[in-house]
Image 1 (cartoon, rainbow, N blue to C red):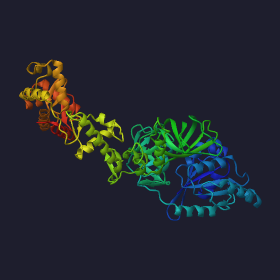
Image 2: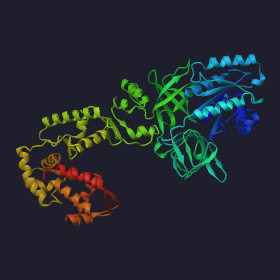
Image 3: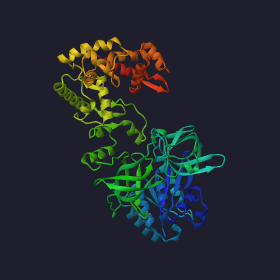
Image 4: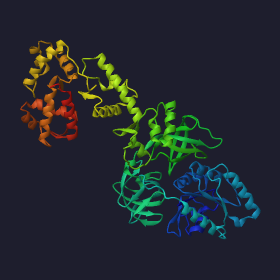
Length: 621
């Protein structure tokens, strides 16, 4: 269990931790000289059951609130201190507000310096504390009277903490690893070390991690978890990681960075969030604030979206996850304004206040994929969903979803999409009976729901796989559609086909076909392009049309050449000219069937098989 202190400056937080653990959390000479905490301090206390309590001691001075917020991130239990002689003070109130904004509800209040006051004064301050806690997450927290000087209440407090530790459920280590870095330093003979609380997942010796948002890649050389040498650090522990790698130095890693599973590295600079303002605070459009997330502090602007929602536009990217808590302070960093929860790390810059968008935010906040898929735009990038939530990869075999590449849609939406596409194709074929098919973008503009072009292409591929549509030559058609040539086209094709067949892998160019076809060059070009849309020929190079079946045969022959072959080998196998062989290779390059390296090629088998199926399906031969 991680215990974090909170409370006004000089209210005995550090002294109380010394009394509990025997460790002085104030490690800086400046802290000892001034008698106040400036930086985060740390101490550890072994428990009878073999576990270790970790303590994070935070500064109480108003100038160091940013350190307090950093220390409060990832803790399990709050130790709110109030000095009996001073009573409730400004930072007591602000620290409690921050604790509440961070969603922390487990904790205890310690009335410190009780040796300095009378019993009557103790009762007065306890009454003030009870009034202060009312309406907060710590409303039910008990109060323990203590004195670090006399030892009063210290043993009782220690027993309460041990009991709370036994009741603290272990955090789920199944998620992906994230550690919020609050310190980075160099140890002689060891190297660069980062410390922080593991927010999710686990890390082991030898693991690769990325420090985000910089993207610096490192390897874990050693681990200290809860102040002990360990082979593994897990969620809920304070860990020190010794990192190594190119460019890994103390100066390359900053407080506020995250050390995380490399798959999670996706910094964000525009976030939609649930925002709760403190009483008396208001937010104007584009108001500047200081955003605190983990140990990071960054300038931001706020765009109110509605009663519960705001968009945060950051001055620089941060590493975050959906569900993370944050705190906002005013631009001058003098007071806390509010805080809340990150809901969407990839927030849109436009149409962010529409009813559809606000409804989607409600669904996103539920973390229920089915609710999200039921609302516009009716699809979800499942890989990004898991990445932004630090979730592990899982089986995607949900029977209620249809997977389209990285995206999913619900079965209901998929059925509506397929029906809309079928109707659009039927209307197109009725109006264009001699056309081989419709261009995908023509269909995309009329089919509902309207998907982005990449997702629409993936949907068409899935429908083609299921046999619901057919695709050839970049066109989409109903499986039973047969484009018919009119009498003029049929006569022209009967004259053209033998000319192309006679020199199968080196057919005549458009200019060479004009005389035998008795057409002008412009008319011949128009006719060949029309035959290309019908799937009869393929324009391999400008004004150079091959029979579609011939291109398929050339692709099949090329597949037997192995890797690292040149134009000369294909030329010899096809018994054609070098120029025609180069044109075919460049065509295959464009279609992704071959990969060029200098003057040599290698075949991409998967892409080549897809191309072959398309060419064979679209050829009338």
